[in-house]
Amino acid sequence: MNRPYGALAEFKSAAEIFHACEKVRDAQYRRWDAHTPFPVHGLDRAMGLPRSKLPIFVCIAGLTGVAAGMTMQWWMSAVDYRVIIAAKPFFSWQAFIPVTFEVMILFSAACAVFGMLFINRLPQWHHSLLKSERFRRASDDRFFICIEAQDAKFDPEQTVQFLKGLGAASVELVEE
Amino acid sequence: MSAPRTIPADVLTSISANSRWQRFPLIFGVVGVVCLAAAFGLSASTVERFHFSYLVAYMYGLSLALGALFFVIVQFLTKAGWSVVVRRVAENMMGTLPLFAILFVPVAIGLHHTHHHWWHLVPGKDPILDAKAPYLNPTFFFARAILYLVIWTLLSQAFLRRSVAQDQSGNPEETRRQQWMAPPALGLYALTVTFAAVDWMKSLDPHWFSTIWGVYYFAGSVVALFAMLSLLVLWLQRDGFIRKIVNQEHYHDLGKLLFGFVIFWSYIAFSQYFLIWYANLPEETIWYAHRSHGGWESMGLMLVIGHFAIPFFFLLPRAMKRNPVTLAAGAGWLLWVHYLDLYYLIMPVHSTGGPQPSIVDLLTLFGVVACFLAAFAFLAKRSALVPVKDPRLAESLAFENL
Image (cartoon, rainbow over all chains, first blue to last red; front, side):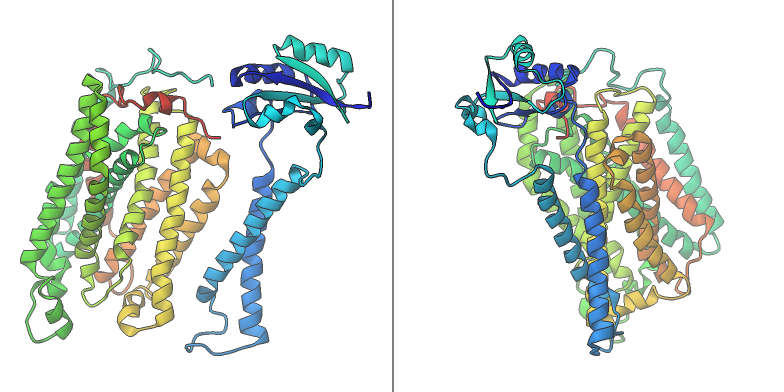
């Protein structure tokens, strides 16, 4: 067998994986993840996940968008190509609000989408878990926990035994 | 996952016999009447001033009750589950609407002061007012006012009565009936609130027009509703009621809606200003021209900052909406700037030279709000503080934000 990617445990219900996650969290594992066919309420807390940092980045991107949108229009209308429109001042901030708003939305939405992809390390052409036949049911009716081999506490035998002890229907080592 | 599916036995779901809330109807009722009488007495020489101040205060109190009516209708329209534990508080706020039919009397008496531009119309002097006379005349005005007040009273009592009846019977048919009533009720609500805002506030400037006016008043009302609903829920919890079952998940949703409607108000307010500014037509800009000198321009700027920028950034972080102290601070601030917003809409018609703050303003405001709180407390102690047998109660108790 090649180097293992991690130990994959299969559970049959949301309640089972919920309590299993609490025990994996309490066993101080760091590099692991849960895969479920639908969102399970409270699973993030059961896994001990911190809140995403994405909102902070989106907020910064939005404020940048406001500054960029207003500066762009100031430059175009009041500096670079001055045209008198409806006898209004060159820098008529009122008229620039809708575009400024839209640039804010554009920057925030782009930051949210691409930031999410970056944080999740997506796109990936391949993922080792897809080698597992069982794992295909993660999008249907089964719940999985995978503890990765990179975790400092990972041990091919002990981790598998630990997962079996959590009530997993099956546990397997997945190759890198 | 750990939240209870039924109300725990140690949670107080109704006003207990030894609570100070038992005395609130009397206390606030007396405070309200004394404040209004003092305001009237202090402005005996300038009765016009009293009627303008009272109109601002009346529209303020009314916006709390009308906002609540909107909230309750929408909960049934969308079959909302999360809101059941806070819905009775909103229903009791909505239940105060018959009081505003009584409080309308001083407004009606003062109309020839406040709406004098068209109240005593001399035909042939002003072609615009002549053209509007079939709509803007005292008889039709009163007929419409009575119609709005009757519709609001009937709607609020119809929803409140069924909800309270369900506390005893547990009959899910009451919920189905309210869901059936919700769509036509919302249509009636939109029409009556729009026309009432136009009649009672916009016709102060009878030459002027703004098609967004009704939505502007509505947007402010809903901001005020979520602010007041949050404060009343937190106040009841502080006094020992409905603890635990209303938790930070529900605060979070109230805060999100408060935040959302702050943005909605800003969007509506800017839309009205922006189109008038851009088109630059004298018959439209006159309204802002009246509000661009003598101190009114500072107040307009203050609204941009106080009614948008400050609450926007204050309520933006998730933690601010989930913490009862910061949520109450944001709600209290918005209730204050909502009053300034209505002041800015109405008062420049009277104080044309610039703001002339007066003790009469505060006394009428305290008077109307105290009367509102008295009616609210009266309703709150008559029934449970949560719809204890609502079919969606379990969903609300177990509610979590993802």
